[in-house]
Length: 46
Image (cartoon, rainbow, N blue to C red; front, side):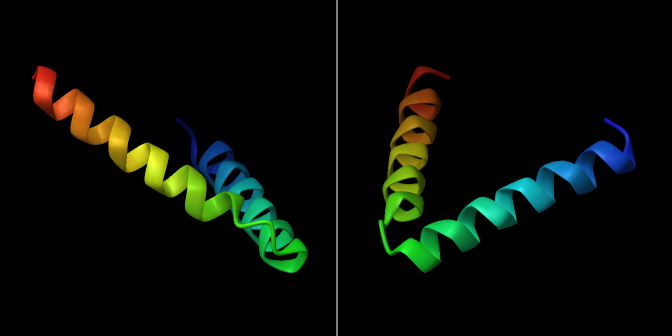
């Protein structure tokens, strides 16, 4: 992964989180919880 690609991905994530915060949908918290569930599931199968 190049530095330019990493910067673009971080910018897209931050923009998405900003839009979520401004609209108040709470999707970021939902996705964070689901991601932690996925990590726990992967650790279990390790």
